Length: 187
Image (tube, rainbow, N blue to C red; front, side, top):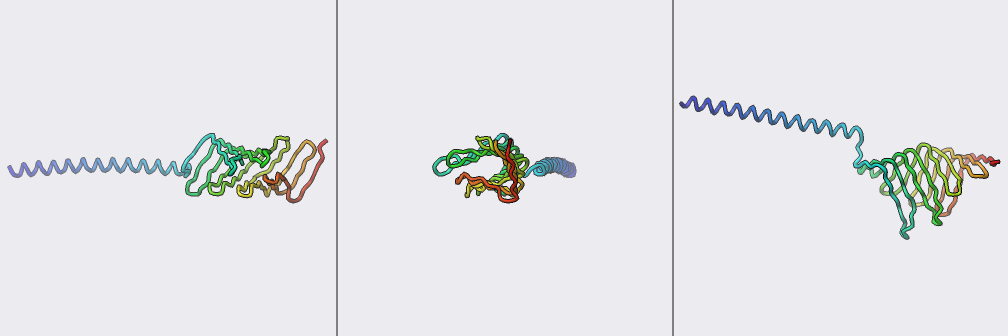
């Protein structure tokens, strides 16, 4: 009888061991599936957060709007403290309420500094109908200044200016081209 009981215990042990192996194998497979999925998501983007159709605004200490930012999509990268933007329209306000509206294909918003860069088919205009085109611009939040080092074409109802480099000082309400300036009168 002792040998039959021992055989039953051994068989029970083998069965439990087999069930344990199946259970461990199933857990490993499930964990590796999650790892694979996680890796493929990271390959697509390492963004902490992704948003569609965003709107963000910044006001000064007197609660006056300094700028507004609209974008079709945004990806927030917490580790780099930046937001990458697609299809952007930004409105920058002067102290007297003049608005410069600037749009571009791509952009970056720096969380710590509130600086904004736009690139790809930049078009800017004001309510008087003056406009400019360039490849990229950079908004310096602390200085309240918009700059570009690229070729810029400015057009108004009376003239066309072409040059390299642009500075728009929002507090002084000044716009200037920096070098290689050519002017043409509109007829």
